[in-house]
Length: 106
Image (cartoon, rainbow, N blue to C red; front, top):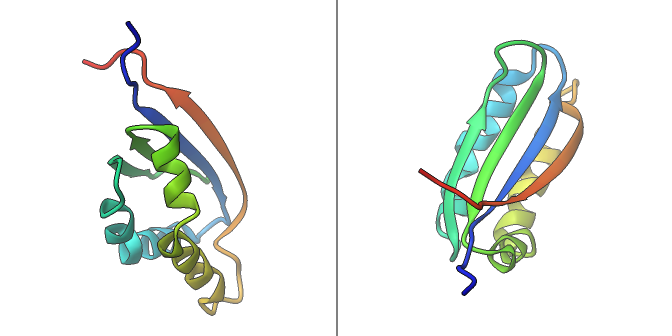
């Protein structure tokens, strides 16, 4: 018997030095958007103790729930807003998405 397993998505964001507070503020402004999505289970924004790479950790009940978020108007709106906010220096210069299935949770 196969049990439904959560999926975890971790976005590694390479933040421009000194721009961490701006990134944190942007996420704080739109955090409620993701919380309302069906299948959403959790979110954490992880500030680096060393270096400039932040990690955005989200957990979803399924890959389909995550895809629905990425394809939603709320996702598009939030990312468009982040790009349009005026700032001479960009907040980040690269990102990569890591994907996992949860096989054990305590």
